[in-house]
Length: 450
Image (cartoon, rainbow, N blue to C red; front, side):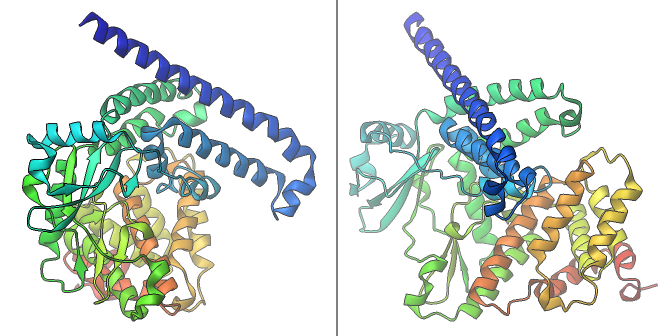
């Protein structure tokens, strides 16, 4: 017992030393380059940006590298932060999107122990064969190809054994850091400690694979009547807290569609329909959508994978989101500003009139443009920039949904350059708001009954 505690204490001290070392190295890395960026105008000029922008871009780069070196918890938090343009400026968001969650795999003996402990049986009893080398290895889990007794090929996701303890320790460190920076007046307004708890909760949710299995089952139920949208089938007896066994999905990413000869316009609309149904019909949204988690099959089936993180929308949030986006499409800046403000869990706007004026100015700048010429991703990103400048933090569910929609818009335009998300989404918005006529009257007076 004493020896075990000593090992744990030494491990914690080692981990803390590593965190302090990396943060110190990042501090000096940043400040050593700042004078160069400020005193050598040509360096910024070649990148087509001013000195301030160059310093921010450099800070984002150092921040991303630091998270990369600190491991699982910090990488996951960084990935979640990359979906929050209401908290961080665009250069930082873009840099965090490049976080690479790839690490060397754990020894196979450790993986065997995790699988056998979680399933309560030997590896040879559970699987006819189990490949020792993983086909993917990330900071939280690695995936192995295996074969069942009936010959079915499966993908087995196995949680790395050290992760739960490391995440718990890292969370305590991040909370301590958040409390320290809270003493800075301007940072305090952003509620850093509450933000850290929120993000760490999202990370912990992804550590229990039973929750991902439950998400999978709910998605399967929600889309059981849709012929085009699929999710990996689960093999329930071989799933647990640290092991998830699913069908091995044969599909390609969007970069490989040319060799399949698929109708990309059709795929763009299938993907958009899937996300809009999640948001406006089900209120249950895949919150880790990026091109790598969307696979395409030869029969025009779209398969969504990696279902550990989801966003939930109750009717109030769904209605508010629909009203905000519809107001944006109708060039109604005051309504956009009001719904964004009313839906915020943290309001510290020093001057609401100035905030509203900035939103109205942005929305007014879109007047006269054809809907097909507008990009929802750019416009919503600019709205979030205004919210952040005025110390308004958006509802996490709101930003999760918008990121999902922006990913779909980006893929839609890549698959079909004529794809118009604003036009495609409006029937869904009217359908939601038709169930809330008072709210609809505020956005579209002529569309609601009197």
